[in-house]
Image (cartoon, rainbow, N blue to C red; front, top):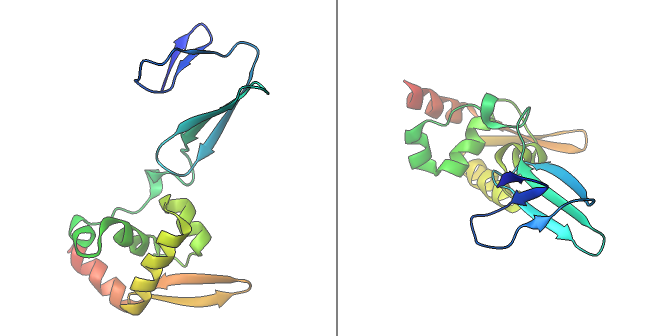
Length: 143
């Protein structure tokens, strides 16, 4: 996606004609998935540029997943395990990973069954955390 100037925005490399955006409502929407897209409603002259957010939930402060752990568990599941350094809800994990709720739930189920994660209720939320076995596994990966 790139700005062409003169009220024109190119959203992909295909040879579609540019859209004229003069006088329309243009919204910018940050999302946690790592890719963006555009949408529009021509009758209402509303356009939206949906883009990967940066900031608090971005990759900048995310713990690094050791390559060997990613190969052992799969990169997505290993990423969930690494994020459980402090107790987190499924909602937090979905926001931090950009994965869908079903995917995060499946990863948590496998980690629970393997004894690498535990869960506890905190008010109305269920929080997931790393077990000591997961801590041993992670320390072995880093050592």
